[in-house]
Image 1 (tube, rainbow, N blue to C red):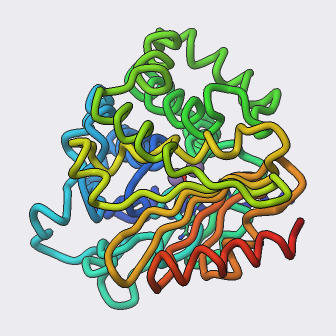
Image 2 (image 1 turned 180 degrees about the horizontal axis):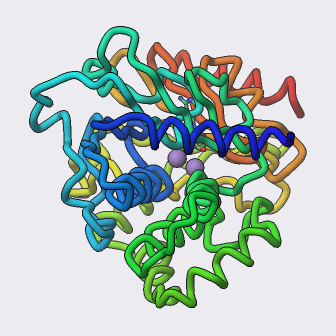
Length: 325
Ligand code: AMP
Ligand code: MN
Ligand code: MN
């Protein structure tokens, strides 16, 4: 039996056999993480199961239009009042990515790991890991169909959102024929494709634009023109009135420069840690670079959280990128 079929069957069994699930996605959730959380919630509600959706922090305001988005509990605002024996993790390449939500996993909790990162280390008791999928939302689309459920517009909108954001608007190399076929079906359920593109990919808030301008002012380029990077700190957020989610997308600018192979964004978390986002034009496997720092991701898009100060981390990351060039 094909791996994917076996994993779909095992996932179905996991969902059918248990009740009262915790559904979690990765820290600082992106469009795919939020959409996948909600798609699992939708699936569980169809099965008549009880579930709680949670993230370590708030979900991006921009995604408030999604069905039940307000139901995703924000642990930074309020803790949960119980622990869970059955947990579904979506879009998390490794266990660390669940962040503080793990405090609400009961001891010996059984995990269903649904993800599309090639660096996924299969930390679940049941794993539905499909590295060829463009987004975790694509896998959920497949799981929903496999389980014989009929989609409706709200869940179609969630899945479309995950596909749209993880493919950069159906432009990145993960935009497979399967993605386009799925998008086509989802549009038939009444998804507002152009409206979502406008909201998620085109529109910017003024603070977001100011943050981008400020960040690009400090853009750096290596001598050979192959690596370009920018850094953003809390001071930049304060000065521009921008919020954390406004940093998303900045990394594309250094990467988009002609001749640049790797674009980097260093986000200073505090005095002790930096989050680095990496984007590749194709030659360099940035997932390998990210993994060497304990992170992960995809060939062309990866990330890692690195302990240390910005000044010490930048040269270390540049060195690892150069080794791959
Ligand atoms: P980002 O730069 O945060 O947009 O992430 C790019 C890709 O790398 C996404 O697919 C992330 O899920 C993945 N990624 C980011 N940070 C990490 C990390 N610390 N560990 C594993 N994967 C990560
Ligand atoms: Mn993600
Ligand atoms: Mn994803």
